[in-house]
Image 1 (cartoon, rainbow, N blue to C red):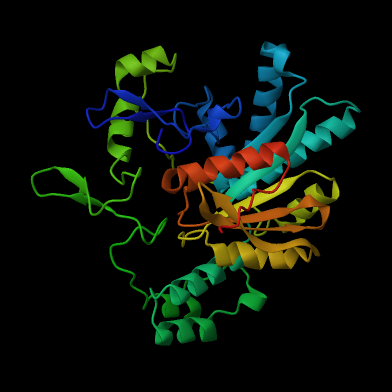
Image 2: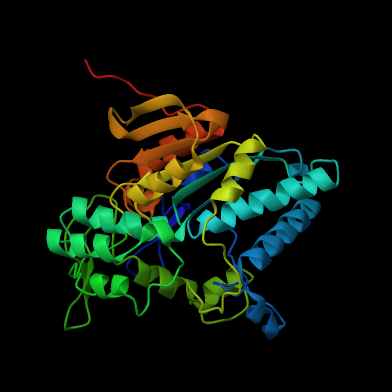
Length: 354
């Protein structure tokens, strides 16, 4: 409701308006709340939450898809794609691998997976931290001195996942970016006035940093929950689950998917510091794939929408210009052009200006 869905919630917490750049303009979309326990999803066995982790999430999502296709068999033959963002850099490749394993094991197509599309993905722990540091420095958020100290004290070549209590974490402690949105360092933030009012600190066409509040209120309206056929519950977008398992790097899984000839597209909003474009670039370099289509611009609405490069095996990397972590929130038109190209299996167009 704040990103790629068909509706937006107005400030009255009740009225809906159409999102003209919703992704269901070009595809049927299933929104899956994952992992179990998030949003309206739940387990009748509370001890299940103690098993939460990457592996359980992929298994649960696979069971859901199989059951859904049994319930609606008319969709079984349709081309199926998986998309997600952020920690879906884990969720999406793992679910894709699970689907391909089951298809191979059963010697038939259970889920007709045709590709994955992942935005601003969390792929590799050390590369994500290293990329954030470089992003802050190249975007004038961190000083030369702090940058040099972090570079000196953080050994990314021998990263073991342990930052706490080290010279590396001490070097990071000197960093202060101020009151900015780390998911889009150039976006307005939501100001909380003393009288209880909320308003954006600035204007970005089509984006409201305060939209979380009417969305939250709408999804907690008992009438809405009833219409959704959801349990009456206190809805929230996140849940503090004890995470059991997660590899430090998803690159081996991505390599396997590429070798399995599955189309893999990664996209990155270039204003995001949380899962930054440099971090994604470092991870892609680690894949060691030869370039087949060199880095070039792509066009949306007669201007550069971003840049794209393709690699051996069909692996594709795109940037989305002027977008943050939630690409369809910050650049909805460009995100829709990208999605349409992905579904067609062609790189986004480049129309040179005369």
